[in-house]
Structures are given as structure tokens and as C-alpha cells.
Length: 82
Ligand SMILES: [Zn+2]
Image (cartoon, rainbow, N blue to C red; front, side):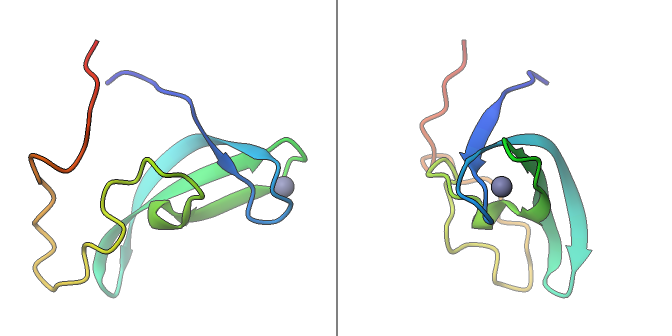
């Protein structure tokens, strides 16, 4: 696992916020990946990664079906491996 710094916008104040942790939480639709973000003004949020103000989320409208195992879409992302 390579640690990457992801920056998004704070949902409260709009300042740059750092994604400093991620966790998969159970929900009624199945597991949902959440991100903990902390902004420059020290607001801390735990929110689904789909709600991050960031364009790097490859599937904006996926995961709504009951199976929930269609995670691998080979041509969805432009992923850099260095
Ligand atoms: Zn903030």
C-alpha cells in the first residue's frame, strides 16, 4: 500500500481538506467506503468517498445494486503506477 495524500474541499467552509483516513462502514446498501477529512480550519468530517469534492472518484453512480461486488471495472480509471 502506497500512502497518498488526497486533498478535497471542506464541506463546511470550502477550504482545502486532507483525507487522512479511510474506512469501510456497513450501511443498508452494503459496505460503503468513507473518508475522514480534516480541513485547514480543523473541521473534521467522516463522509462517504462519493461525496468528496474531488474528481478522482471513478464511479459517481455505482454501487446501488444489491450485489455490490462489481468493484473492478478495468477501463474506468487512469491509474498511474510508478
Ligand atoms: Zn472547514
